Length: 80
Image 1 (cartoon, helix red, strand yellow):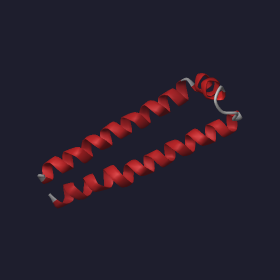
Image 2: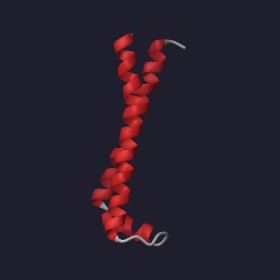
Image 3: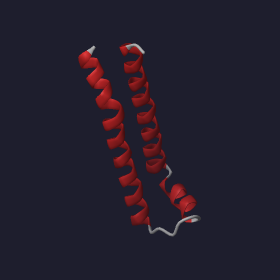
């Protein structure tokens, strides 16, 4: 497989994953009460716990994107 193809895969993977993260954040920020009500039907979480779970999830997801998508992409750009 060509270096350019692998680089493109990491680039598009980063774009798609950051788009998912952005949608998650926008829904969380703009429809917070709706999300809390929806998740409240399945899980018994106080509002503070709900916020902490989502904030931690977004932070972890962002870290994983940086480690597994952005870093390899930047490395391939430097090498190639």
